[in-house]
Length: 91
Image 1 (cartoon, one colour):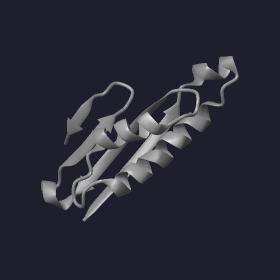
Image 2 (cartoon, helix red, strand yellow):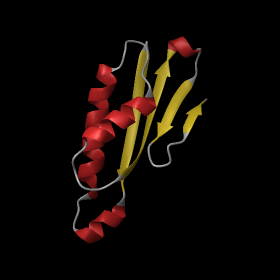
Image 3 (tube, helix red, strand yellow):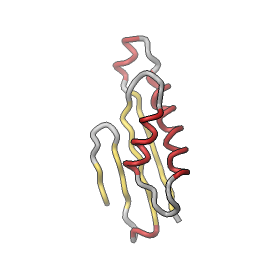
């Protein structure tokens, strides 16, 4: 069994330019859901998911984002990719 959790928070500085920062983060997460559904069975890769979602997000703005994949096959490990810094953690 595999599950994923994701969250994104638009960068507020874009509001100074009249950009609704929520549009970008919502579109990014929507594309992340699609990318997760396209991942190989039992193998969600958070970095690949965010890269794919980012590459097709067209809204103006930027966002921090985090995708966490939970899977039985990793003996309880949690895989997490943070979009803003590119940091990767295996917990």
